[in-house]
View (cartoon, chains in turn purple, blue):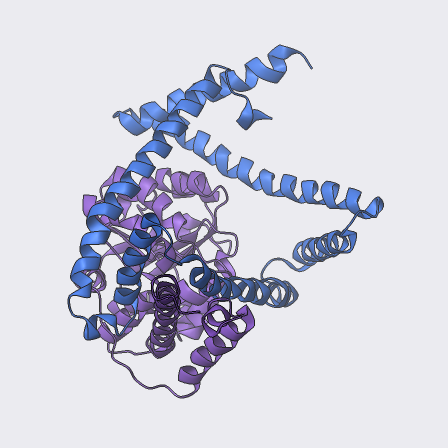
Length: 278
Length: 208
């Protein structure tokens, strides 16, 4: 077998070993490579920044354990931003793994005490609503009917000051779907943002971000943070570089590695085919 | 069970609910009508909650049979049932906010799930390396677009090649949006056709 054949049919374990090194090395010793911020990340940040502090936000936090490693980065920084701006926020989820991840997010960002101190006046957590899109439709129609009139802690919604006069999707000013489950944010767009004509901000996985562009183009979705890169840009805009920005060195290394692999393999194929080299 | 109970009653319920909910979505209706539709939507949430219990029962039935008959991979089925029973018992006894339930969730579900999802990245990279071998015109186009998008997505990409975001932006907003819209419209039309066929009793896929 010629050298080019060996390289073209390299065993996957060698690809994985190099990949692991390229991932681990920059995490242990960050290089601080420059990061570019996408225009859509600016749109997201500036949109949230421009909202007045008395804005009432519906924030579905549909967290999933599988995708948390990627989109969790953007949901963390966005929730931090929402708390920093002092908005009134009603959190909820249509994802079964949502509640525990939501409270862990608050604890990880040091926001849990603030959340509990201002609970009922500035923040409310509605708990998990089953049925995915039907659940979102149910919340959009009537929060009290969808939840049985109780929040996550078993409080009567009517006893919470923030919930006075708030019952349907139309009572909110903005939807910020700090989503870790990508397609669920489309359900919030379908059931809340479009019928009640309110802006919606979403955080899709990088792998499905491309499928959200038609919504942005049509104005149905206001802005989105795409994957870890979007989160890293957002951290930089907030002057609060964190785990997403720290991961960007590894992401750069892996992107370059894969480009070299694919382009290198095709160059070898081309040489083999047209150069007559064995 | 008679045909009426098995076929006509479910179709009748679906037909009525579909019309009621569609009227509310597309037209301005009085508040009394909205009260009815809200109740219908809350039924969906309740039914979805019941569906979870049904799912648990199905797992028990399917994997239980496998364990009893000692079919291939029965040990994995036994493990699924064991974990499910532990989760249900701990959840019912201590509640979903209890220390032990959260511990189980963290150790048995969350970390393995995150790990298996992360491993996809490794497999994807090897698959891309093997798949993007240009041996036809179609793969050539596909690889060129992939290289541009991938390089633009690399955090350092646009700094090295400042023209990349412009090209990537055009790819995203024009061909990508056009193709995705086509896909969405086709999917929506298909859903409408399946819905109509189900409502008139020509398709029973969703009811079996």
